Amino acid sequence: MNNNTKISDKNFRFLLIVIPLFLFSCTTMKYGIGCSKELRVTNQGDSLYTEIQKLGLEAMKKNNVPGVAVAVIENGRVKWIQCMGFAEVKSRKPVTKETIFNIGSISKVFSAWGFLQLTEKGYIKLDEPVDQYLTRWKLPESQYDVSKVTLRRMLSHTAGLSVHGYGGAEQGTQLLSLEESLSGKTKRNGEWVTLISEPGTKWEYSGGGYTLAQLLLEEKTKEKFADYMKKNVFQPLGLKHTDFEWTEKMTQTSATAYDTSGRPIKNRIFTEQAAAGLQTTVVDLAHFAELSLMADPRQLNKVLKPETLALMEQPVLPLSDQGESGLGYRFMNYEGLRTIGHTGENEGWSAGMFLDLPTKNGIVILCNGSNGDQVWFPIYQSWAKRMKGMQK
Image (cartoon, rainbow, N blue to C red; front, side):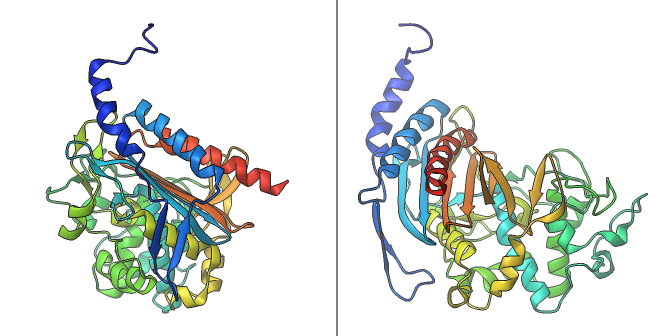
């Protein structure tokens, strides 16, 4: 047996424990979030379910990712949810539909709902300079025009702002204030939020823009960002297991995060919650995907108007070879299929949400491993193949 096919004793023992639980899946479930009646979600007769299970198990084993949760949406409604592997390996706790995952930069899409709600309430206009509303922290003077930094541009990564992303801190660590983060006191890179190009002239991904928008929301509402989002977005939408804080209850049902070698690590917490700090379940994320696809005013429950959501799902110019965004939502073109949504990567976590607006279909995938992108991508490929087949 050559080195490429040999399985070590350690890996063999791991497989003996893991494989039986990998076969655990949420093939049938009930939930009534945001619905007038309970929905039954089933994989009955769907070859995609079996194919994704096979691909998922292979990729999980190969890439040291213990657990995955997948939801497939068809015609604007969840068709089935599948849960594979472990939320926590040592205790052999399986992933279930109630398991909490951090979703990294998919947080930005949820955050954008809160920011657009500010515009509906008249707190701010999309194309007004944001700096005029800030008192706790101001953008540094620059050779570029600070007055051109607007909420529309911050949410579409066209504001010319720095700081691509954030690493967070281990749970239990004392976090920086928003002002300290914006000033570059983060341990990861010491990068402060400032203008690095003329606003409105290029697409350049900036988690820093979302941190500035987080400060803007707090300044305008006089509330903490996490509290505002829970009260004004998550609760009205019926997202009962979604929060920017690691509450004690959420910690009890959370998956454990695992690094690239499959070692458990502490959960990450973030000052920069709007950019990367959201926790949720596959059920809540799948329902959020349904809302994004259908914009049903009865389910939106006055959180946003359908026309506001439609605006968020339109591209904002300029775009570039590196990306194209709406307001919160990103446009992606993996495997030749144009979707909207987002992906998310934090240490120990990886996730993807892909929505095909013309067909009202989608897929969401949550992983509790740093190599999770190596797991969700083949799963996405399988789903994308079906979507392209439907377009012919």
